[in-house]
Length: 423
Image 1 (cartoon, rainbow, N blue to C red):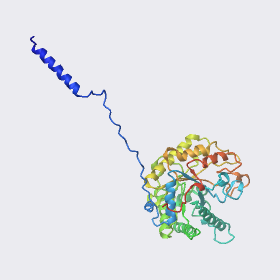
Image 2: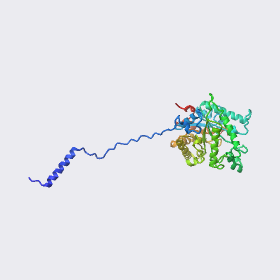
Image 3: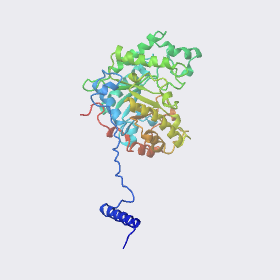
Image 4: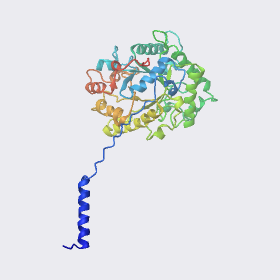
């Protein structure tokens, strides 16, 4: 039978297609691409026990001071230490004994706050029987006791104005004094020698702070704190940013280089007025002059501010925490609190909810928080019942205990030896 050329071509093509189909595996409906495994990002910690001095203000700091810087920085990665101003001296209802924080929790605070104000007061004549000199001795004793317990000492300085030395509040000065006080203490100013004499007194006291083995006790010093407000004579309305930086740098250089004091970490501690990193750093003297980046903040956590205020305070800590991560500095909330009085009630959840959120949200790394003192010595009568840290019998004691025992909070029983570098 005769087959047309068209049919022959068609049959040949079918045979070829059939052959190809039988010799090749079936093509899947879709191609399976193996997943790309992205290794987790590991944050490299540049701070080591061998390079720690390169990130500090004082490259010649004592070994204990170096260890304090290192251990505080490391602590902030997982916990924040709890402290209080005058914890060993002023108490709720003026009752003496152990710290009010220990009365509440069973454990002492990590941080003891003190003040150079009475030490440098003009009334302090250095003689026995003088009340101001007695206060100086008490502060020295407390500092040594705190160190012997493993606590950390931090000093502010409510330095009095240089004209009459009566007050550190700007409202107690005349308009002319407000305008000239800060400039007068700068190099070349009419009160510069006066200021150096005050620093000499601080240097003498700091160099006398020694532990049981004769080692110098490290302290954190935060000069001219809350400078962005206008309540102190060194406030923002009374000195320019450059003036402030000059005074801060001179203070550090004079204590470190001229007086040879090497057991101080230096803290930069504005109040809470800033709204971004740039405004926080507007009076910053530079990384070579600051070990601790701090913030004092009472206002954002005041009554009526609630969660909004807590979040705002956290966002402000976030600026300095991020900067501290980048520059390898310590970040801290250097003062805070809500004072309960006979006419001011506690804020529900202030410690365990609002403050804890402020100190921990948004991956911030805060090394410590310090509350202001209970029962100040100037208080009289019912005012001695004022407190920032509650004690047993007060209505917000459970709130504080819950805060202090949370996973990221640290009291003295949960911290390592802060004055020895880990092996």
